[in-house]
Image (cartoon, rainbow, N blue to C red; front, side, top):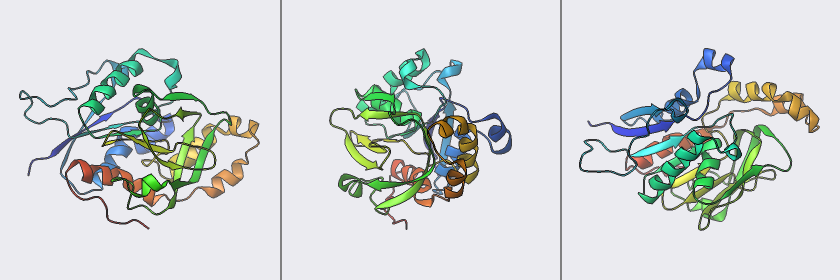
Length: 256
């Protein structure tokens, strides 16, 4: 059986103690993708370190073209317009134009929106961290990646910036009371999610602790945030569903 070639674009590193104990963002993403049970050939490319992104468009010279790409989160800010970030944004525009399936997570979600003409800014209410409920829009209920999810589900979050304006023609898929654009799709198969499907309980609590100073200034209860952390199976399922989708399988089995 020929493995399906997937790319993880690594744009950041998790907290040092988490990386030592449980691996980094790309490891968590790969674990979620492999939960699909599909034969996957997963590559990791880090443009921050000078890694060259592979061609987004298939050519006759490629024996095994990319089938899809996941763009990781980062502690960086899209609005800083770092050279590696803007270069990746150009690559993402080409990928969307080529019809390559894309899943952007947190920073990757924001960078995809920026690449396609949307607006990214600091959220006016500051940080969203911990586990929160996310709600599907009517369009989300019909989306090929999201349609089998329940109408609302818990998800892990850790962000300061947000997509404040979607790209022209983007489809709004999910939201909550804090974040207007928790998920969107641009084109037929490029998705952005502000929440973290790759996070587990340990990761969520680690970011609550890491960002506790800013959260306290917002008047948030650190104890309440920690008490509210819970498993997020529906959100986590999006990674395996994305793998099913890029492998040409039907990802629409329902998740409770």
